[in-house]
Image (tube, rainbow, N blue to C red; front, side, top):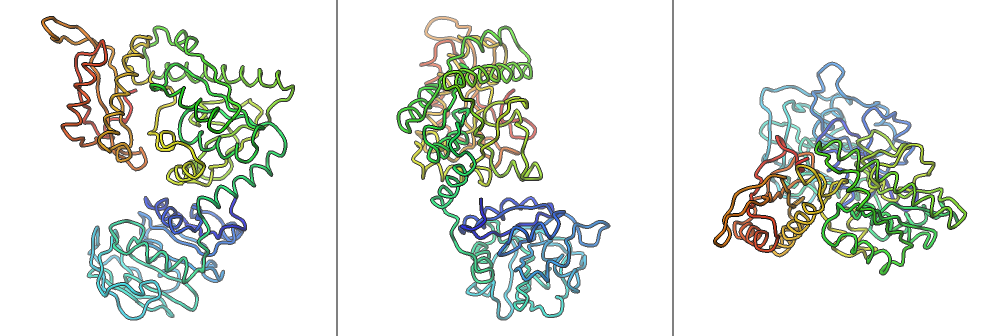
Length: 518
């Protein structure tokens, strides 16, 4: 995807929690970046024709046995190098400098002082706040390097060898706590590497369209729409590339949010004129879930039923057109590629957007989003004209509302939960918090609680409101919603949703809890 239109900067991951953040910061400067593990052979890195290479930080010390390293030939490859934190220490050690455990580390906000002329730090104030996280420190720079900054516990907080275009910073320019960090990265990208700022939404779309057309030719393509942002943007991109060669299959499981099926149909059938097959299979899913209590069984039954419904729809399409669709659109994102350790993704996994297609389905994957982070997918979706309600939709579990009913699934419970959930989301939007929280939804425990409404006693369901903040869903904190927002939610749910007489708010973070209840 990135051969000619975009310059590439390779981020070598030495085990840092910030490797993906570095890559995203590079992309925010409109330069394409890729993350590779530090075990990647140098020849493979150079085959990507990078304009620059960034070494990430890492949790190890350069002095431990089997410390993460890289082929020293990288410094003779005539490609600019920037080492960050551990990466800077590795540069110093491999080129003959000194790295020592001084007994005094630096963690968090630190005052750094500039020293002399510096290309990377040019235009920055003599003192600035940076984010440090190190135990070892560079105590002497290698020959040919100039020390350009220091801090109280880091005699060499920044160093550079302009002649060989090798740079290092002990701090983390990619985090927001480093006051002018993005300016420093831009200096490296544009003044050192001479990258072109061509990684933009419009250029991403243009290149993806060209690639899809080259891959698919004149053959038919099928896409499983889930209602989520990833599959929606992937479908819109492929439709822009091949038009009516694309057929989307949207399986309504009966476990969707309020009006979600209508919204997906409206967007793709009427706004984008996509050939959309809307399979209404709620009764089939409910029958399969009858009297099922255990969460994992729910998930497996929903996944298996989805597979069978999707297969039947695909066969019907082939019968109607007398031609099988050879290509399957997937909304795979770049973080999944990174986490799986490579670009080869031959097997369709159950956690992908289409809900778990079987390995023996003979489709060739079309993955137009495989180079994008989530925020880039949303931006591309906006550029393609997808409505805000889809582009900024919060994450929703594949099994849908089935795993937000703690107990067996019935049409009555689904209706109660769907309406309560809609009120939660409406009030979050009304308060201007929808984009600030990672997820906000309602949960229905299948128990009854005693209440008093009017002059009579009630025995109805409780609703639990769940709202969390997160960057990546790996960890999450419960959202500190204003009391008046919670009060409106509770009042509306009890007054407007028959069958509910109590509302609670879940204040559990992840860990120890999970975001979803099942």
